[in-house]
Length: 355
Image (cartoon, rainbow, N blue to C red; front, side, top):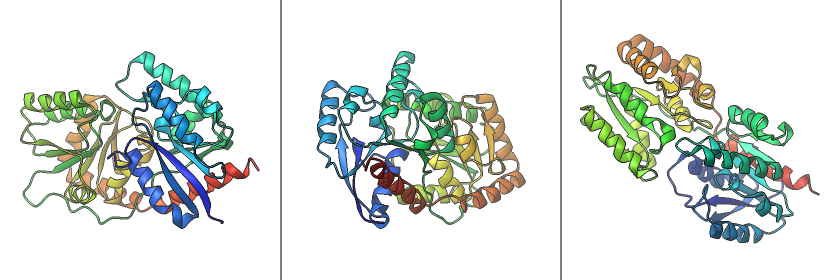
């Protein structure tokens, strides 16, 4: 396959510590080995709520991409671009959708409805659409009108890892949860569930940036204090890869109370290390976490989450069975090379269909 020039338009800082930006970094690092010579186009950071100035600057930056280059636009920006902006480009466009913007938690209903309509119109303009899970693909077909023949699923890659060793002997079971502190991650539900299990031994480490929703981060810290759990629940903030790996390696179980996931990269990372899962079923998480590897609960259900955590903490044999199934599932996950190869093929196809 001949080398293809491409541009990947990403809003804000590529170094942002979230799953979507990690996905972008991983495929950019591997594009050269898959015949893609890609440049990064850094769009304004105001998306998914761009100002007029942001939209003008975005139009200028995208218009400057050479016509012979394939153009991939991250969904955090693409789904918020007005149809008039996209119609100005007489060129193929590939949209990368992690999850629809209007399905984010914690936004006003009228804003959610507006984002859904904007994204529906934007996706109608896309030459091809890449999404990160079969669940999100079905949503894009059924609710956003994306034709199946223009849609490709490229699940996030997961590299093989050593099996987690767990907490040291004599220490309480170590639970870990990962993801930026935002309403969608359901950390308030997780804290409330663990407050009901204060008479049992456990510790929880929540790993993820706390600066995206500062008011929520402060409210969660207050919730922890009021529950008398300040010595047992800690927030690390954003950490580097080595620290993430160490925290996973020292965990006994992984917990996700997320209200919605477009895929659930942290669930896959946990499975690569053989961690048993307690996970809510919001969005694609229900499929990402196999039944044999996880105790699954409805999103937002404190009672169900507390019950599942109690089962996990109180049954060593159950925890081992889930861990074995998790590790086996982790070995079947696609790698980042697999993911990049699928996207590279889409970028080639996006130009070939116009020739």
